[in-house]
Length: 78
Image (cartoon, rainbow, N blue to C red):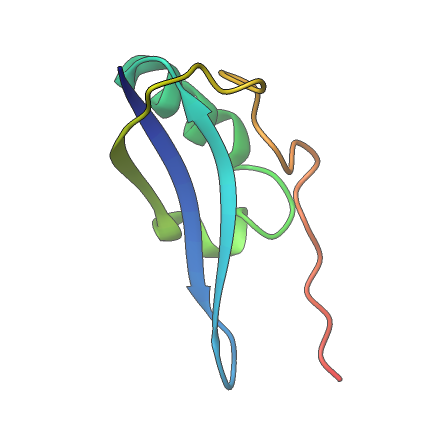
């Protein structure tokens, strides 16, 4: 089976931060998830960091079509 994985990458001061957003059954579902998250905290500052990758799976993921990070995120510097 073919699924679509949404990830979000952005550059911190000293490293690259990567978040897995979710796995979706279609490209349309993946694009809708990106639109949902683009305005949330953290994501709105780095809206160009979303990428969609085609992945092949032999089984159906448990959390199919359910985005993680639905409330956005905060970045802390130490």
